[in-house]
Figure 1 (cartoon, helix red, strand yellow):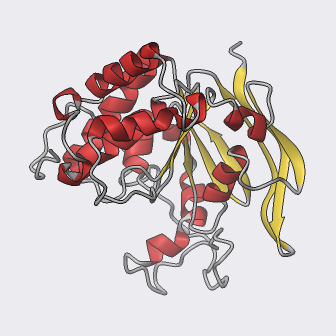
Figure 2 (cartoon, helix red, strand yellow):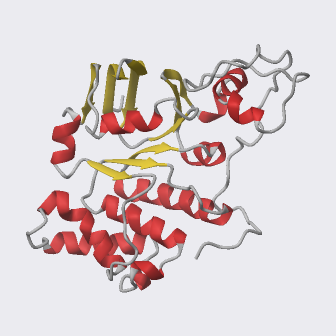
Figure 3 (cartoon, rainbow, N blue to C red):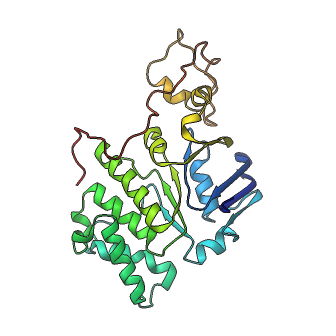
Amino acid sequence: MVEPILDIHDLSFARRGRSILNAVQLRVPAGSVLGIIGPNGGGKTTLLKLILGIEHPTQGQIRIAGLNPRRAVLSGRLVGYLPQSPQLSLNLPITTRDLVMTGLAGRTGLLRSHDPDDVLHVQALLGQVGLAELAGTTVADLSGGELQRALIARALAPRPQLLLLDEPIVGIDRRGQQDFIQLIQNLRARLGLTVLLVSHDLRVVASVCDRVACVARTIHYHDVPQHIPPELMYRMFACDVAAFGFNSNSPLPRCEDPACDGHHLAAPAHLPTSIPGIESVSPSETSDDKETR
């Protein structure tokens, strides 16, 4: 049995008396790719912040390779993170290589020179994410897809064992999504990564993830994406489904979104046997979308 690199036990978190997460149990084996899905306000980003040590549990514990989150992050060698909205000024006159090198700060320190082996590793990463020819290009001149790959390379610069990605494909077109799927699969194989991917795009999650965890205050499901019960999906995403025009003749289930006002009705009498849109996206699938450069 593969030992978990991430082990979360009986985790609860509350803010100003309001419960955000409750009794979360999650074990993530080394080398796996876990997709984290759930409604807005369900606690997905809070869970990432707890794993990163930015927030602290009200109850329970988190261990990353046997260490608590603070020690794991401070080691500079265990955890890589790409936030949903990276704080990055595109006006800075830095090259793609410079941007990726900043990912070594937690490993070597801000004022120390980089180890030659780390410099070679960054150069290899640029090749692996398809940016070797753009290493000297300023970040302001990169396309959205290229910048995303550069930021993933920066997160991988310190050679982490665990990579956390928070909504990494927001604003990326279909071709860019296919490139992202292929990139994660290649990096996982080459680097032996464990990946946690938070995403609302069920097609991408189904394509790239071994397991999926449905989070809405707690873990409602943790298994392969293709076996998610349709009724669970309706409960968790009722607010999103409502946006597609369901009316009183097509009753919605009760929403699991903690921010919802509870206006949804009972579950539909006839649930589909499969969930439209969750079929996987093949990295080799052709697309008429405009290519992300």
